[in-house]
Length: 415
Image (cartoon, rainbow, N blue to C red; front, side):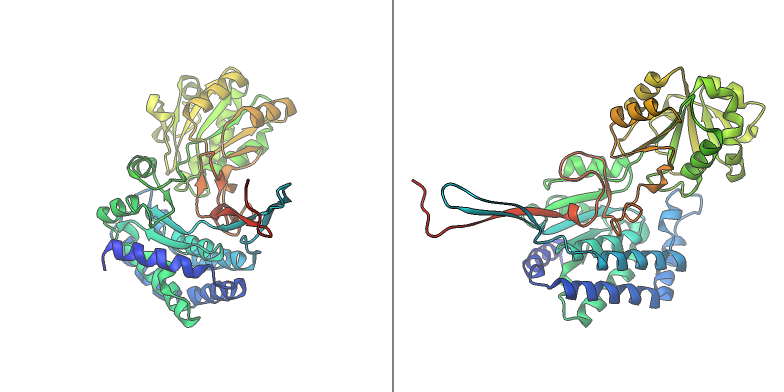
């Protein structure tokens, strides 16, 4: 079957999706969650084939890896999505015009959602569950790195769909080659929106090459500004969590921006980082402070390339600033508008940070690791949008809908 054949099947399936009752959709997703867990061994076996082709030192290795606990976590998110109210048919506006036209504005599926992503097999299940619950068909283009994992996942999904007499065409898995990505980006008339999830390079490539509307997601160059008023114990806890919880994901901390008035506290702030072998790329003032207080093998002098980099590994930059204005300027220059945080006890500093930082998620005294659909109560996420049109931040069910106007009258004609 050609890629075009799959696009045609997806478009045809979208017309049938709107006929599915939400109670059936819910049952399919609940049964699929149980099936995933029951077939953990199958998923891990397929995932092992992918892992064997990637060195553990690769930043993508952790994203690619499935475990029994992670599969249970994906299944738990799917159950949450299943239990949520349908986002379809919601009445957004209603009015009767002087012309006697009765207008209703209601939510509807987007239609066919294409997703291009790299080595993250959990995305396969997350995207399907969110698209299916919101009445959309999904066309998936995963990377070569996760091909066996994705193939096994889609096989389990299609088996579950068939058991409920639902067309398996509502989920399409394209080949992992670049030609499939190019075809998907050119599938105007078949695919309604395209969502890239992965590196900045992938996102740029899709944005520049697609004929389909694109929602940019994923790339996170994340900062935490530590103000002169910051609480030391909170800062140690939050910064360590933001950097080391899962360094390979997009909400992980990349750069600590430190007020010079707290420079003497820097060794204590980052001491625990050494336990995780975090390499620190420090500017001149930070380097001088850490030179005798942080392992020499883990301390490097920062260059210009240290800032504005999404490390996706146990590596972090530190920039020392003289005041809040300089911190805001640095963040504005290098931010990818994903997640940014401030550590401060001064309410005025927090208020300015909230007001002036342009990002999808802005935190105070909180780890940026929380930028996640499930953590935001969305069940799961199809991605984290860093743009401003249509959706911003973690995208859940409501972000996968559009709307249409329904107009009725008793034979009114326009004069």
